[in-house]
Image (tube, rainbow, N blue to C red; front, side, top):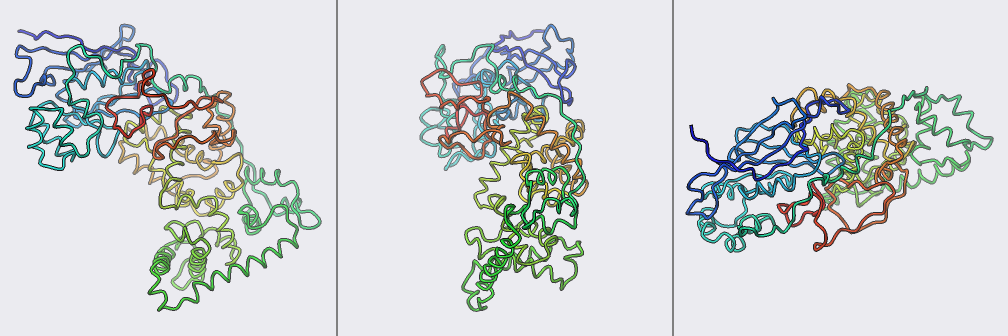
Length: 605
């Protein structure tokens, strides 16, 4: 039997398969290998009609075990013609990886490049294949062969042309470069380069990195070595007697930091919440006397009813000409009618609690004209009204809560994007393996945590547990953004279930949704505090992680970056470095010529 001659056109060691979901990698969980791209030459060599070498059917990518690694059963080989897409990892603290998806729909094991090489590999593959960024996902490269029928179908799928794809392809095969620029209406920077064949021996615009160049972030994670997670024990709730011991002769609270710390570590007894929540939510001042509090309440009562009168005095005829107010009223009535209706305080068709919810939310529209009412606000007000049981006091406590979370309800969603980015950053420091797994399953954006952060876990815990969780978070201890560590704690509790069960993206979302009402708030808070202590004990904690935890002041603002991208990790206490110019040294391995023009070269997002 005759075998065609082969030529190794790319070879890279230090490529690993991560085969275990164990939290800390050991020798059994890392399978070392060497990745090769092998060109199988055929006699005819080139296709006459296209001017492109028809390599996909005759070239292959393979992974073989390194000599020091006996697990040869993990070796595989796949023809380039069988590839459907290639997914690259997000930037972060762990090694960069690529996931190869075949035409049959299966995914090969993620290839983790511990010593760099993703950029060089993609450059080699782009000589034999068209790699196009997906319009829906910039980290997903769609793989297309160099033939006219495939190009026509591919361009139609990508919707890159304003005209018929077949006509463009026929002209493209005759003059690929000029056709590219004259016909592409929505084309990435990669296509402009990939569709122009480079002469033999021509130097690439982007020289290959040295063999020992680490992936972006590798040096950072190598110094972020978290110590053991400490054991945390929560205390009992603060009682009325304990609270009374902090009240001075004039009704002024004393030793407030100690009192807040007790609330953080144990919460409040139910009978104390009605009074204590007014302080936690900023309605009453921790430093004020009893008389000052009474005067403040009288003033705020008058202010509330003046605002309430503004919408109460609008006639039906006026409201018909006020579409904004009419829209708010309709949305509020609909949301209130289904908010916590299983709670005795709100059950029944003529429940007065529902009327109070409605009135407070409409009055808030008068208080905050720019924000108005957004779905989800009724979920935040309901526990407050349940505890305070007074319309005016509940309104001002709700306003205090909204001061903390109003960014969650802004139309731009920039605050939510920023929080998800910070959550991802924290999770990458705490558990890079879990992040890698979620990313490989198209869940690395953590969008399944959106509802958690939007309404502060209101629908994830039983109602009494929500009261405990919120009063702990309102203390602001042990620093800002404890709610992000609460999310990390939940994911940490579920990591083995997610990773060992082989869940895909749909199963991950389903599992997270099914956690509703099954979580223990004390277990979650205990773990969140332990995570905080573990992070703060790390002497080499990156600076922007310190910012999230309130351990360092925010860095000076720089030129704006895409808000949808996760916050990049910055070295500990190191000043931010300006973006390199285009004519200086080559970028890190994550900077690929196949990135769209609008993407940041230094971001592997």
